[in-house]
Amino acid sequence: MEYSKLVEVYEQLNKTTKRLEKTHIISEFLKEIGIDDMEYVMLLLEGRVFPNYDAREIGIASRLMLKSLSAATGISIEKIENEWKKEGDLGLVAESIVKTKKQATLHSTKLTTKKVFDNIRKLAELEGEGTVERKIQLIAELLTSSKPIESKYIVKTILGEMRIGVGEGAMRDAIVWAFFGNKIGIKYTKEGNNIEVEDRGVYNKYLDAVQSAYDVTNEFAEVAEAAKLRGLVGLKGISMRIGVPIQVMLALKADTIEEAFETVGKPAAIEFKYDGFRIQGHKEERGNIKLFTRRLEDVTRQFPDVVEFIKKNVKGKSFIIDSEAVGYDKKTEKYLPFQNVSQRIKRKYEIDKMSKDFPVELNVFDIIYYEGKSLINEPFEKRRKLLESIVKQQPKKIVLSKSRIISDKKDVEIFFKEAVDAGNEGLMFKSLKSPYKPGARVGYMVKFKHIMETLDLVVVGAEWGEGKRAKWLSSYTIACIDENGKFLEIGKVSTGLKEKEEEGLSFMEMTKLLKPLIISDKGKEVNVHPKIVIEVGYEEIQNSPSYSSGYALRFPRVVSLRTMDKGPEQASTLGYVKKLYAGQNKS
Ligand code: AMP
Image (cartoon, rainbow, N blue to C red; front, side, top):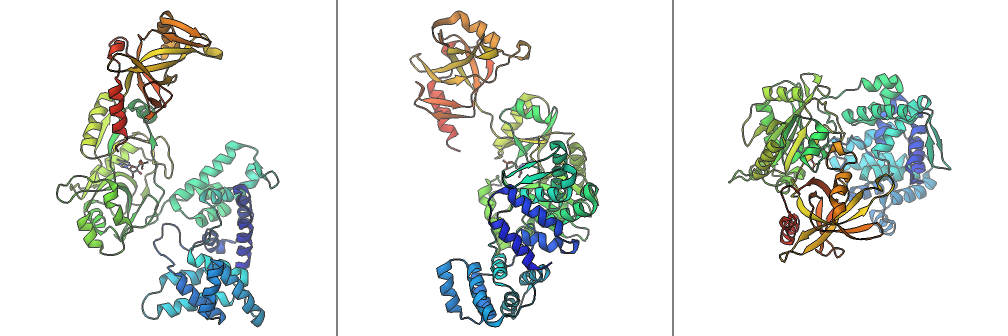
């Protein structure tokens, strides 16, 4: 494919900020790309020549670009530099100086995307003597045969400054529109900037298929090729490859133990949640180990210690494991917060010294691939069993994440304390039967970081509901107590109660309790004698001038009725609220 075709698309994309329009432009373009060009064009379209997980870098600084522009045009470096100062963008400078030059010589061969791609890739691969001259040659070769507008994009791509605003979501959608457009009956209208599809369900099915294929390959070219050649079957046939990172499974968040269990089911595998950084470890058949971060950066070079642990302690010819590397203090051997080891991730020199000064322990918690087979569709409990049989644990080197099968809230609380005492962030709840879903934040894994101290508060007022809640007092003004026994308001709560009595503490029950206590009413609002105590959970305590206590609760919810074991004088005190407020702002 001629490079000028791709440049036309860049130009169109630059003219709009609308995501749907960009998607449309790309989808139309995708239909034109031949299979042989797919790899180059898809990467160049994203402004790169290596997939995002590839550690290789083009590595051309602006200085070298100036020299290359000078070599290509015969214009002095000083002059180009002056232009650059005026324009502020070397891509635009390239366009304008190639334009003047072209009028003089007017000879050019047509550049292909393959040529552009090959030359730029070579820039990253050159090593040794004479490298700088060779790099200048490679760039100049492209610039002498490019049209002015092409040179702009060549320079930007080389410098890593292509900002055409095409994200992964738009690329995914464009593949669906291009290759399954007929099946989903999609219609895009530029004027209204909207799309119509015949059946959302079918559309989502194709979006999921493309997304899943991308999650395990991280290469749109491969996904587009499969979609174009073999449709849905092609997409389903795409599977992970050792050495190519897959998107990791993500966790949902739970505020309470009940909520966590509700999401993953009971019993659940509950693990320490380590405060480190995620490492996806690959072992290739040849014995080679590769390490990737959660953002799929290749960090193999930075962690020779981890490479060794995996090599020596994990049995198997080929596998992909999922783990958390946690820093620890050399002397005390206590876990350290993530910040302490984070500097190792970007480090390029003195790597061995770094691994001695900032040692990490690898906590392995999942296995995604083993001996030539993907395990993502195996249930978690089976994957964990396999891990237990292949990892030889060595504390402070490589261990399995600490895990228990638990179904009781009390046991979770004990385990939580153990986790936090050992310097961890909290717990991870995992569903025993679930598969591994790359790239998704589904409810197969739930993080739980705080056991929030609840408050026992006195109901001092309430409000009649509306609509079908009209016969109930459904919003309650709640108060804590000060040292003089005075009730001070701290907010209003209406969530957490049930509409049906059989489901738990209900509006009806609260209404029955409160109605006889009404002192006065004003419109829908009533004041009540301070008798009823309820346990209230919340997200956070905030300063607030609106309530007499000086505090308010963010996202308050009723947890339980405490009247059986607490009178109003035993409600949470203002002092306690202040203490919790101070504590939460410390960390
Ligand atoms: P967060 O970064 O707060 O969304 O929490 C999710 C992250 O916790 C994961 O991406 C892992 O890096 C990390 N993590 C720590 N311990 C575990 C564990 N036992 N299982 C899964 N993930 C864990």
